[in-house]
Image 1 (cartoon, rainbow, N blue to C red):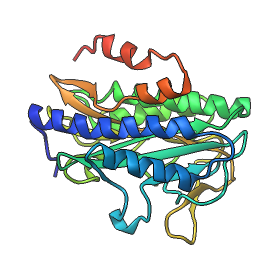
Image 2 (image 1 turned 45 degrees about the horizontal axis):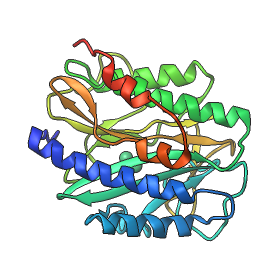
Image 3 (image 1 turned 120 degrees about the vertical axis):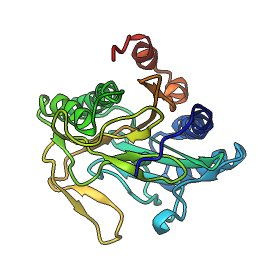
Image 4 (image 1 turned 90 degrees about the vertical axis):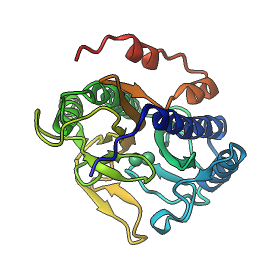
Length: 272
Ligand code: MG
Ligand code: MG
């Protein structure tokens, strides 16, 4: 069952999403060679609590930490540990928080120092595919339209689109209906309606789309051990159009990256 949100609830959800956006920004300041994912996890937990919010992942389905930290060939759901990050790594950092009784859920894949050009390209294309998918999240479209757009964009670059893990509706629960796969067929699946809020999160592999689960019951890696990228935004349908609730602005500020991707996204007229 899809739980639609009122405009007032969407504003409350924006606050939850922004808690996560700011937290990723704080984490971004500390992401460098030598830091461990457990140290970053501590920064995130403090930052969330300082904002009067609650870590959304901690204890959810018994997950042990605040952040899912998935380096290199790990796709998602990696558990923070004491291994220092090294130059050339990438790491997907996925963060959730509860504020106003709503969840925010938002992820960015970071580069540690200089990374291989083909990995850099994977990150760029995966992030672009996020916006390509979000554009299709509008009144009159269906779940398959978002998945189709992401899949086509990434497969055109020769990448593997993970099938087993998907985006999702978001609200008072972390995972609500509908599931939002990053693959699909145009015009198929549930129809989008005003007030829907979803987390769209392409998980894209440099090589094969196939994955394996580790014995810890959480960590997912690519079957060929090639790198995997992951970016996630929270998006609502407001006045028929997709509206970003989360922002990478804090991450970009921390990293000194000039980016107008979100502004560009907002300014483009989305004809319904
Ligand atoms: Mg997430
Ligand atoms: Mg999610």
